[in-house]
Length: 405
Image 1 (cartoon, rainbow, N blue to C red):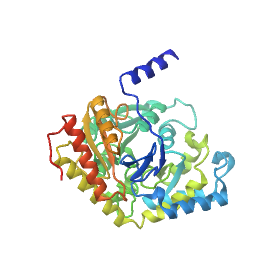
Image 2: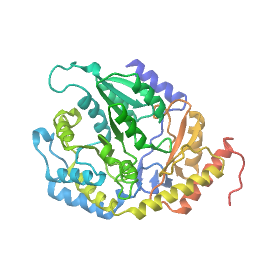
Image 3: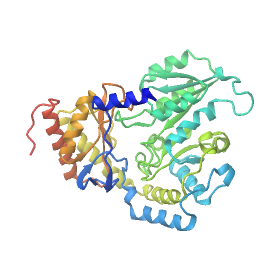
């Protein structure tokens, strides 16, 4: 335990231990209350405001009245609950896939899928393991990295969103079973991947493709179906992962694909088989959320319009914004962790709650703010954020002096 104590003490000594303030009101709203003071929040993933939507909350309450607060255990042992199956049908319908399996968290979906699909389930555990290779983007979410490590398949990392590097690595690999995994939306990089290009590469080299669309589902596409609907190519995605703690406003994760794949995952994915299912009250809430999202094209357009407005205002103020695509997560690049922490504290003093994203979420010396815009943020609130960022940027010599009206 000494190494743990030493590590924590060192991280605190150099000022890198993260602050985790306790929010008492407005947990996922533009205005929250922390220590009795009101702050503007720009770090909640509640993109469409579904967390506080009265219809979503009422659906959760009705589910509690009917089912209680928990699922009762593993579905393999305790059986299915009809409302969870209804949720899975709703997700499959939203994403345009055949079937779906849900998990209590998105992390659990990614942590279990790679061992399930890339390792032997029936027969010897090490049989033909050298014939299986996972090709993973170097900036994939940590849950993907952790999930890949649990599989015995060979892992090959390709440069971030670099299809030429991916092709080079596929060309030199003779594995029979190849899986390419990337994210549909890289929220920390401001990118929507060129999914049709990845699908073309997968077909050319006999590989399957998995997309982590945590930040795409609910936001992209006419009906909020995600990156696959955005590009009209969802039928070419072999495994689609998503989660319910962002645009859907709740919590939980899911994997979508063909019916035979999902039937297989129900018995082979250890993070499902060995865990309780998603709570029934959450299932009820998410069914209602999905029904609203499918009708929410105007809300999505307004949200993306706000994102473009804020992005351009920050760029004009002299800040470096990563990525060319407009998504409701704007990466404001800082670089040095110490400067990033100071910047965040200056925002805090200005009534803005926006923690800095740093290692291990991103590489060392590449820290950044991920500014999350919610549908119920007002233009005045966005302007207030820009003014606070400019004030902090000038004090820290990140940008030149500006006159903000």
